[in-house]
Length: 146
Image 1 (tube, rainbow, N blue to C red):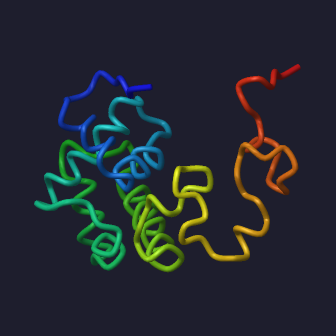
Image 2 (image 1 turned 180 degrees about the horizontal axis):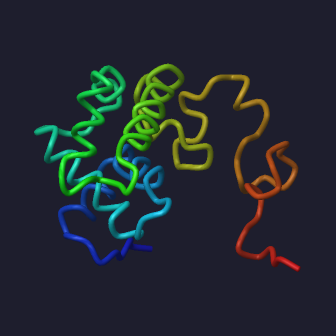
């Protein structure tokens, strides 16, 4: 199913083409309109002047990265805190998945491709009704809330 957001077509294309951009949009999708959250990765890419890369973002000087987030118009209502969150997420991607955000998905088409063995053994896929993950991760469209 295609993603249809009322944002610039280039921003939507980036979300499709770059899993890191989608992850950053999901991180930012708190306390701001969804359109702002999911268009911000495109603006971040423009401000960096190159494609989004987890290695580069993780290694960026934190003060400079916060300034990029805070530059008007800010990428989030709380730019400094969210710049830190994005950098921390990119560091996790680098440390655990070699910087490949597509490999970090527990249920994506490449699930388990480069995940640590300990994670793969525990069955972290949201589609698994027996996985030892929190119940909120296991809910599916067929599960109704009381």
